[in-house]
Image 1 (cartoon, helix red, strand yellow):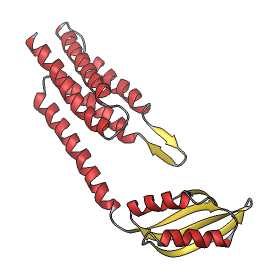
Image 2 (spheres, rainbow, N blue to C red; image 1 turned 30 degrees about the vertical axis):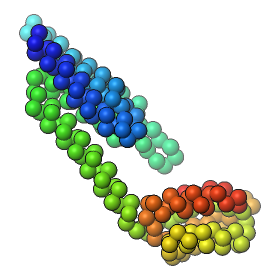
Image 3 (cartoon, rainbow, N blue to C red; image 1 turned 120 degrees about the vertical axis):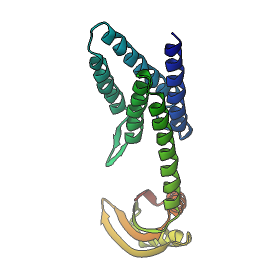
Amino acid sequence: MEDFIVKVFLALVLGGIMGLEREYNEKPAGYATNSIICLGAALFTMLSLYMSEMGGDPGRIAAQIVSGVGFLGAGAILREGNKISGLTTAAAVWLVAAVGMAVGFGQYLLASTACAAAILLQLGVRRTLGLLEQLRRYDTIFLTCAPSWEVVDKICQEIEKQNVQILKKVVTKHDKQFSVAIVATFTGREFQRITKEVLEMPDVYSLYK
């Protein structure tokens, strides 16, 4: 009974820790979701061990945990045009279930180490991405605007105000509007400022990169 309480408590704690990181960064599957998944995986694993003592196959339930969590993870993956989001959340859900299974099998050190490694990885990745956002790199800004060269010149002037160097500009006309592709060097933060300033112009219809 004591061992059961320890496993339930540890599953909730480890699942909660991993969920807090997701919730702090405003991602799907936060504290409550990860805690429940971790506890559920641990409980199913404990039941499989109990079944093995009665002559059952302990691997049957464990195998269903993996496939069941895969179904949950698939629900977190979204596709918007050419962009796919939610892959990290899906992977985190899968890992949380693995941590819960480790707790259920009594592998406390393994579960705790995996949890700590996942948190450090997430923090390290976000730190690295933050540094990359400060580096200048070549990229292309695509936008649509009113069919006027004066508007295009104003857009270029607004971009250059952000200390961004324009290297190339291609303008095509279709459907009574200009499609403009601007190659420049800028950081992630500069692109955010460009987006804010340029989209406030009444003759600009869309902007993306």
